[in-house]
Image (cartoon, rainbow, N blue to C red; front, side, top):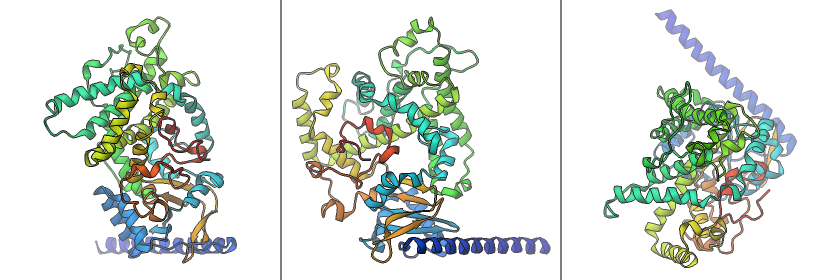
Length: 487
């Protein structure tokens, strides 16, 4: 036992020595390259603890408690309100965090060839989503983008009749849950159901119909395959993504997170998608006359459109799941936060409601077009201010594919460039970017849709990213203040 204990102690000491040696070599290499390029390091947050462990624990706790973006903003401001780029390190893992619009422009645009999504994001999410437009890198990403992008033309996705069907199901559900509007009701799960119902119909031609199961279409029996579990698909998807979110927060140490239920949830998600993939792949000319195909006839269905380019079942599953991941939760969160502010700002609600009532007076829901939505003037301000204030996607990221630099953030005053070694991850805290007082004014912490009346944002407002790899879902955002798109 004594010998065993001594052996373990020696192994621990050897591990610490290896880690310290690795850190020293990395620092020496980075310092030499930085000096050659005229770079200086950015500041680090105070009180990081040994090897950054204290900062990591604080970050994980803030994320668990639901205020991670605010914690990051406060950490920046604790260094100084003029500090917009900082360095963080956990053991041998070093990363940069920047809320500087010039650095964001460099990564997304002027130096985009030097950056891609990080390998940790690819590794974490590919077990659920597979390799697709959200998880692929380099040449593989370009191929995925070419498959997906043509289907996101506004004329293809502006199917207001389909949205109206699911909105009415939401209203019907509210009347049941709230007892004709007299009881308290949690809206957010209903908005999650709404976006799941619309997304599954757009992607697969058949809605999960979580709000109104009576609306579910009769699905054909496929040999060797169970009918999809429409009722529980959203639950399995949410649970699987929660595990991956926890893993993603640990970056290269994601393997430390283990959850025995994950494989069950992942398999249920894959079974759901695979059913529709094989249903469409196996359809014949005779199948096209079936009831199940009638509801797909006069609308764009992403799965069916993708089949024109590929019939590989794995590719079809991966690409549609990637789109579902990117669109469902973000849209539901935006709707939920808008209602949150409507409930607290009667002036904003009244102004938005009066515009909609006046503009669409006398029109039935089925008569509205996407052009009618684009003609609104005040509601777009509400949408963009909600995105700005909340940070619907509070964090983005890139990783250096080669040794490179960021234009600003180094040195005591931030005027020097910053060296970014190959493989280094750069986090972009969009919430903190959108709460910089020097960019948005002294009223930055006030919810104020009117700030957008004359504002044309650039790299200080990037909810969809920017450049070649900007989120393809931007085509769904009718109220985009950036026209043309920033590149």
